[in-house]
Length: 343
Image (cartoon, rainbow, N blue to C red; front, side, top):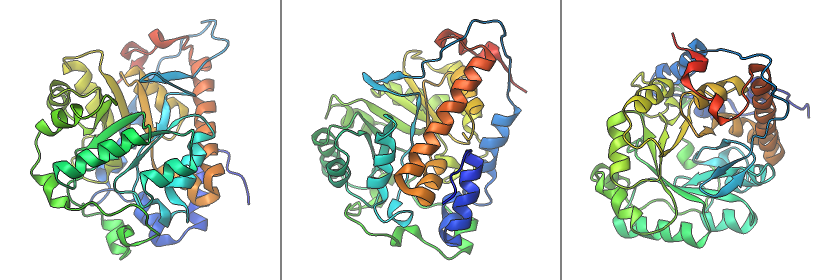
């Protein structure tokens, strides 16, 4: 099996190897992919101003995620139904992330249970993502499960109440929700997600000392609501452009949020459209503390299992380190909006 050397090549190799219907499901954005594609186009519009003769010799990418040391600010975003990509799904994905000392976020929409993921990946730093698809007792049980399994954070996904219309995967007549083996029980009542409000965050925050992150934030209003109700971090995301074809890219969102956010010390995660080391620099300069990777990790998993997943992150980390040196980014102070041209 030929080894991929870029994320672009990994995607090509994955497409050639995989079932077309599965690949379409992975790649699809909401409706006609407009928001999905805008994540990429808005990143491309940003230019980075290099700083030369800056004495940048050795770059240490390692950082702290709520007191957990990780190899770089890049980690795995949650994705559902992973046993359609590999027979061991989330277990194999976790192995790939554990190998490079990063964080893997999994979710209540996954196929493999949190207990089983932990059993097979004892040292993995796991983030558990809860979709509010049940009553408060069920949500409490999921929080307690995260505590039992020593998760480093809990993310509450607020942007995926119902399945979106994604033209590419619907035209393929493929529904991932019915595919792959399952050890993770189905959430009891997805319709309850439509009834919750911001008080849900306050409720969850009182249940545990584990950091609580609200995922799916795209506006300053929602960011401030999440902060006001006690979250420890906000995750700026449009679900990879998969849920709502709003046209708001995560670049748009982080720019607005950083202008109007009331708590400047809150941890900020962002995902959407990241395929290169220079993409990561752009988000760090826009105010992100961490970035999440989704589809590229799936490409690695589908093509070469846990080794493929690790290779995706190794490539990104290598690209990021090279870009930091060539761009003259010496330390965290170097990451600021002044280093960018925003068109």
